[in-house]
Image (cartoon, rainbow, N blue to C red):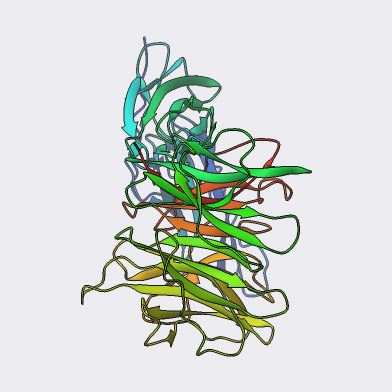
Length: 486
C-alpha cells in the first residue's frame, strides 16, 4: 500500500534562521540586510525530499536570530515546501523556492527529474526501406522499459555500417550517397535497434575515367554507378593507351589522347568499344583535352608546339578544318576547353583557361573565337579546368592560391569572383578535373584527399552536399567524364 503525503505550499512562518524549527531566542538587533539559501541549486528525482536552510544576516554579515522566514514555491505542482523549508519533488520540471524575511529574499533553483528506469529495448519506426541516391530518410528511435512503457529524455547515438554509402546525422536523418545496402543503428543506454537501408540509382550514364600506374600506360575504364557491385571495365582492348577520354554526346564514340614517347600527343577518336580508331591530329604538337560540341559535329582541344604557347583549336569531328581560335591572344597559354550547352541565341560558347604571368584566369568565347571575355580575374588565384552546368548558367572549376590548393569553385558563366563548391567539406590535398553530369545533379572530380597519394573519382551534388567516393583501387584515377549508356 502506498501512502501519499499531501503537502500544501502556503506561506508559513518560523522563528530562527529558517528551516529547522523555531527557537526561543530573542530577536537580534538590527534590520535584515540579506537572506542566503543553501543549497542554491538542487537536482531531485520525483518523490525525493530535501531540507533547505535559510540564513538571515545584517549589514555587517552577522547572522540574525529570531527573525521570521517565509518559504514559497514558484510552482507548487512541481515542488512543495513546508514552513520549515522541507521541499518535496512532486513531478518532472524546474522551479524555484524562495525564502523571504523582512522584505529581503533569496532563491534556490530546483530541477526535478524522472526516476531512472532501465531501457529494456529500442524500436525504430523503419525496419527496411528503399530510397534513391541523394534522398534522405528521417528515422525515429523509441526506448521502452521492461513493462513496455515509453521512456523519454534519453540520448540517442546513431551510426551507419557504411558512412560512405549512407550517412546519418545526430538527429537520425539518413542520407543516401551511393547505391548499396547499409544498416543504420540507434543505441540508447546500451540497447540498440537497426534499420536496413537499400540505396538505388537510375542514372542514364556511366562514369568514364583514366587509370594509370607506375611504368604502365594510361587506359580508359568505365563504371556503372547504378550498380553497387559493379566492377570497372576497360573501355578499349588491351594495348591501346588512352587518357583524357571525352565521349560524344550520343555516347557512341570517344575522343582521347594518345601520348608519344616524348613531347607530341595525338587526339584520336574511336567507337566506344575501341573499333574504328582514327587519329584526328598529327605533327609535333602536344594535343590534349578534347571536348565535343553538344551537336557532336566539332571537337575543341588544346595544342602546343614545344617551346611555344598553347592555343585552343576547333576541328570537325573527322579531324578536318582545324582552326586556331585564340591566335589573337598572343600572351599566355590557353588550355582545357569546355563547350557550353546551346545558349539562348542558339549558339555555343567555349570556356577555357588563360595562363600567364604566374596566374591563370577563366575566359569564354563564341564557338568561332569571337567575343572573348574574362570570367575570373583575381591575380591571387590560378583558375583552370572549367566545366559548364547543363543550363549554361554556371561554371565549376579548379582554383589554387596562397590559401587555396586545388579546391573546386563555381562562378556565374557571365563572370564573378567565385565561391567554394563544397563549403561543408574541408578536403585536403587536390581536387581536379570537375565534370558536370548531363542531368545537372552530380559533379565528378578526381581527388587524393582520402590518403594524400593516389587519386580516386568522387562525386558531389551540384549544391555541394552528398560527397561520395565512386572508385577505390591501388592505382590512380583521373579525368572523369560522363558517358551515355548504350
